[in-house]
Length: 557
Image (cartoon, rainbow, N blue to C red):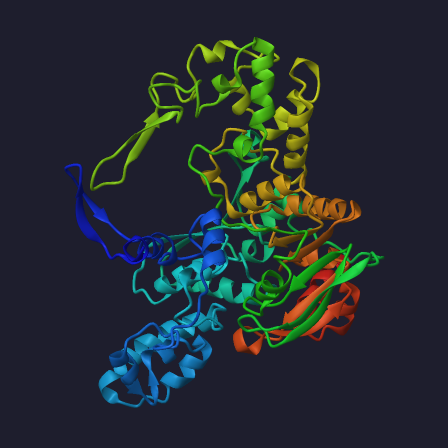
């Protein structure tokens, strides 16, 4: 029994075959417990949480360094303690070091840390695990690496650098982009925020719409000329939502008491139910810690985030949402064959590419390449399967449809499938009508991933929806559609909690919970709770001041 449970790895021979035997407990440690719990699959995580308890290491007290490193100190602190300091505090600590021998090192380090503070990340610590950073935080950390670079005549490409930024922080981000430009570099920014579009020297607008209706350059020029243009961006550039005349009455509350995760300072707050609640505050003020730490996980609460969707490159919107099942069954019934023929992962798959649609070639030391399958021409199915049709379309043609096209196709006529139409209706509702049914999930942006998850969860039994920055990746013209969707969810009896920086969403809220006043240990406090109109009237917080300016602009327009 001891060997079965605890035996360390030992080589043995079984029927002439050399094997390595290891006891059950060491095997569980190796296969499960030694891995990052956030990186494993959900069923493995559930097992780990059931059988294991994680505590801070008693020897290093969580610093992760050995006794030799812990005993080496500068001004009374070892390297682990320094790495655990908030970066804004670490800047002050460095000023206390006066040894001229490390002067050049200190100067370089100080410049880098000041860049963290300037870019709005002074609340982080250097030992913060990279996997816990939000998308916006991760992108800004990458920016810092280039801010101190002496390179010039370089082209930098930033994809929505304002993700996760409070309006207060966007001005600082704009300043950094301009600094990179002024060093003699070209800065290309993919962005939706008017505040960042406004600082551009040259604007390229793509459209006229999304998906198959886009892909054209519809405008090039200055900000003033964009305003005069009749493009979708030009027409909506100065859009401003106004505060609602009346807010909904709550049906109850979700009590949060003594929340102290990360930088939260024993926060007590009642989150109203049956209304649209927006949680605001500067980046790092504790918004996600409050909601994900104290609300998510309760019964009936559904969290819809932007994390990558688990699955292979074969996964697509049709498979993820369950849309493909009723479609396959309808094809099978119409043609009196089995449903498996209409799956590119099963009997109907092209035998040359195994249903992938592309052939992957490994180039050893270089990056691999993919090319369309010559047999199925990228359609993923055997030629004989494509002879079967439903409403005049074969399965490959259906998967090539956009969500909007498919919604009309399955709504009526010979292609009518009620179960499929319901799913497609939800996808259109969340603003994904331009996606194709067979588009790989790996090509979706964070905002698109969040919205496809929301469309899927809308069919469930959740009563509280938590959305983390749902405006990410949304064009100005689509923000109004998002507000309509949030209203429909609330009007259907749901509670919607949105963690958001966009002023249009704040203005549209029934109730606002504002955290601050700053970030890191300067935040983590409840600085306001109430209606948007009360927040604007008080204008006592950074959020209130920016929302008041935004609403004032709306009234002028």
